[in-house]
Length: 131
Image (cartoon, rainbow, N blue to C red; front, top):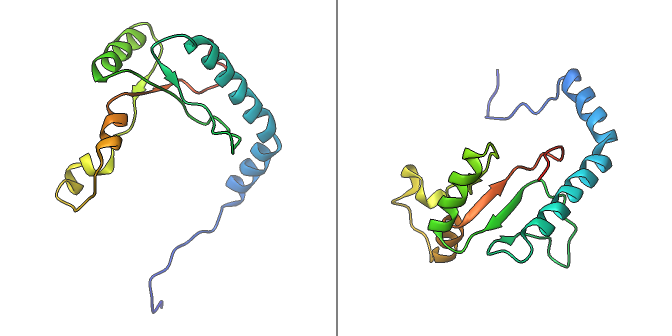
């Protein structure tokens, strides 16, 4: 009998073993992702697209690679061209205030959020993909 709500955060042995094995390879995973980001930086250099790079005060693992397009039209055109060429790109995720369940909730000025969500493209992030 439980007298209050709680959460079960136990980790099954199989999941723990997988996690330990992945942690042993973490540095190589991060280096592969950083190498891919370097390729993207070179590819998008001197284009109309802005590749998101790490800030000067941090070191990114480049879990997600993304570019910013000039406007929503150029984003949509890029998405169509890349996906028709079997390069699986996608728009940035939808901001929470645009989800139906949160549309009527109070919020502040989200003009920058709206602009970015309409112009960002997420690029393939698996390091074995070639550009």
